Length: 125
Image (cartoon, rainbow, N blue to C red; front, side, top):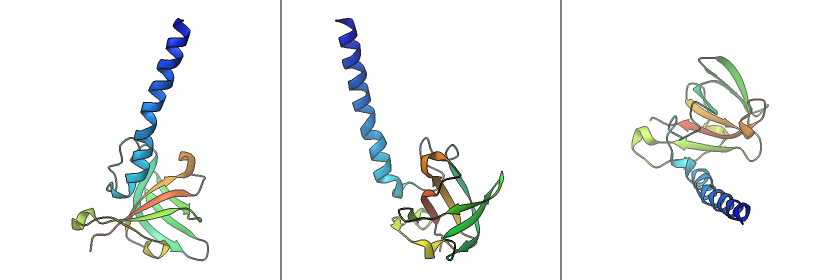
């Protein structure tokens, strides 16, 4: 009987934790660069774009640990962070990944060897 109650309790706790994970994914577009709870600085990289290659569908950027190349594939979300302009964020595209702009990159499965899951681009003008 005790095992049954523990199993039900664990299942209930798991169900309660799922909506917050899905809620963050659904609202991530509206969270400014560097402010994603549990992600920014832990599982993301933030820095300026050094170069973008439409031919290779990649972006070279850097952070304090060095320079790295980000692969942009079909399914990679690009969001325009307009929080510095006090405006609502928007969906963007590869053409918005311009040298000099600050980006925050989240890799698929939190692995920098994988393509980007999403990229937030800071729009300040």
